[in-house]
Length: 265
Ligand code: PGA
Image 1 (cartoon, rainbow, N blue to C red):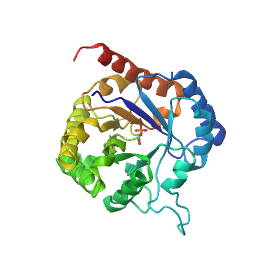
Image 2: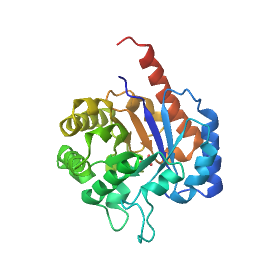
Image 3: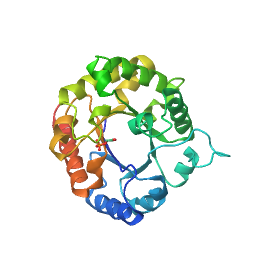
């Protein structure tokens, strides 16, 4: 079974309420219900409900950028998976490199694993981000880092929940830098991730789990990346803040999907 390309926009800590709803409306208006590509928008927590309302009736899903692992209680400032579901969220991004490396306190694989398990158990779909730093790549540690992040991040996962899992391979050195991984680097890393998913969750699960690429995806490089056999979509930061750029990336995905559906296996 072919994996449906999945393109998600991670708006990070950007935009105002009115900018979020305007951008969501502009994107929703241009994506047909029968698009060959699945699309999700991930605004800041405080704008999720408003964006969900704009997207009502469209084919676009809403995602959050993080979630805590407890379902409720005295956890000042945290947001639970149940709350995200309550405002119509379908997806949550967990373990983004900015949460691993930039935002203090930085998250480690144990924290990320608790969040992954809790979000999936609550019924959310999870986009688990993994990726190596430039230093780790230049020392030849890319595969061991990916292996460690996957193994620890997915520890104790019930393989039956694998269908709700998406992996985003995001080399840290490519995020927000304008420096994209080459198509060979992305494909090579993502083939490794799929092989490792096979060992962790079984071959059937590994075949169905979508692996997005993230890190300076833009209209100019989207098609070359999305056509790679183990690149099943993109997690887009900067370019998702501009409707035209994001729509162009989605169109690149739609073209690849329609070619794949007309090419005999
Ligand atoms: P970028 O961000 O597209 O701006 O590099 C990607 C991400 O952080 O998910």
